[in-house]
Image 1 (spheres, rainbow over the protein chains, first blue to last red):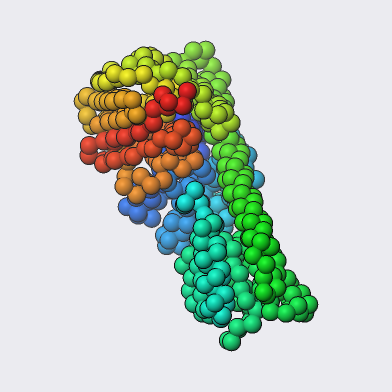
Image 2: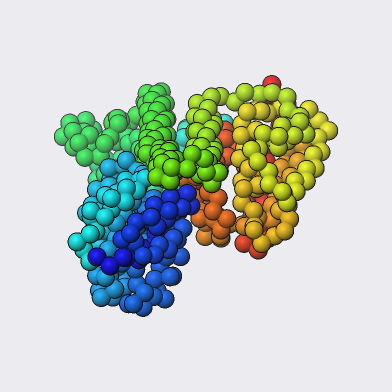
Length: 130
Length: 364
């Protein structure tokens, strides 16, 4: 697997820092770009071409203004070619049953991982997707 | 009390009955009369009448049919049917279809009728009380649901962040990394602020008003001292005018001011060299007016109407985030002590909160 480019979307700056530091230590990761809101991430994605489009988005569920599900609904408007190139894995510290089942039922999100992120677990989920 | 009179509507096609009813009862009730069902329905649609009396025999429509038609407009009103002669079928029909409370036979006995109306008023008032209690319970239940949801995220998320940072420092085998310690400290402070908010919320929702003598200058000094960290470049100007004794709920007023002041400190605009906060307090024998103005990042117009809701948060430019409880507690606490709050804000100039709290100097 070629090292992948990852987008982080999380309103918690501490979690962005933790995930970025974790992932930058992994040899299967090429780049990590953090965003502390869905709005900023969508604005970045809108300017991307297929060549610099990310391979993976790590998406937090509970964020103010635009939560993870609302982000996915907007993300769904990109062209299929783009959406298919990028995998989405949701992350959450929530124990809320509703949120967790919604994440698992979502067609775009591959899976839901608990915080703090376990990079080995993440690798298991995505390793044969590229 | 004039304004608390029970509203009664009486519909009958015999005008003599209407007039004698009105002149007999107008002293005790707010009496509306209608000559036919159509007029009566128009009244029911616009005025929340509490007791409805209807004659059974009317030209276009029976009393039972009319009472049934009023159900959607005022489901909690008490309905009384008036029949010309004893007709058991009509009465059964009335009870089954129109939710009729009592029936009265014509010609009525004034004393009996008065008693029935008194009973009907009591029934209405207790229905009303049950309804308002139910609304209150629904609100509490709703808050509890939101609360559990929020606890499952907001209390847990700083803990999971701490775990993450510990995980990182384990990987790096570096026994002390100041960046990591600082991150952990931030998480702990966030968790602590959240727990304090929960406790304030709980105390506010449970306890009655506790009146004490308040010296606003001392109170403000006290609050400013207890703010965790005030960064450099923050200038707080206070202007307290208090010539009279002020009696109020010290705990709640302190919670209200602490929340607003800590918000004013927290949400500063990074583009301004000086973060200015102005606290103006004007206390007199009737009330106190408090204005807290900052030149911070301001609040979007479309968010202004939501800021007092439980767990509403905005994403802010300087990454500082509240628990979503602070302003909710402010509003709830003000409601308990009979105060009000207004907010004006713009992204250019900052935010200003104006509070009014009555002086309870005569209630002590």
